[in-house]
Length: 315
Image (cartoon, rainbow, N blue to C red; front, side, top):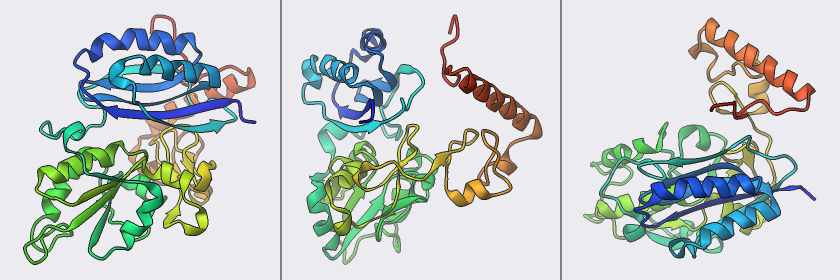
């Protein structure tokens, strides 16, 4: 059985004292041998952690000991290798950056749809299905019939919504009535905030996939699935498929884009240095730096010592 438990979590909840939570939370994670990244903001918590099962469960119990986080939910997956190299607890203005301060997901989010009911919703006429993730994520997998806003960051989504609400757009009124909209993302956090945005724009019938794509892939049998491809995840697994089985993609260490077998077979691919997506965007000087970094990584692996993300003295 795999040795390491991964837990992805988020919750929109008022945390006005979020800055004071940072140091105790980091200390708890480090004491339990847990690694990953957690974000704290006045609007809640978001992140993914991994480590020994007992350590991860101890951190989750610590979080839920705060009454405001008592109902915190998480998603689990197992890995043979620790998918993170260090532990970070960061303070942010938003736990997922949209840049629209008047949107409050804890008060305004759309209607949750459980994974087992998602297919039925998509089969209903007139439902506009929107993938709220970034373009590089959509490129390796999405739901059949979903609209790709082609954003490079989540903060670009509000602008796309504004443009598509205009006459002739995908979100334009039909016979004077705004369309029904279904939105989804990896784990639920971005679509929860996206549906709150849509409601602030006057859309009354807005739905989002409860638990996100990951819960859908975990819950819905592959033979019944409307998902096509793999799902990008923000850890060293890079992608997962049905049943949350690790996928076939790896990560470019230069641009952080997911790489397919075809990408890795390209003459523009060099391990740790470049890939077809970024080869023409970096200078030879930068590539030389990446080559030295890759050489150090390989030396560390031969010594069976961690290199990427290792905290240096005084860091």
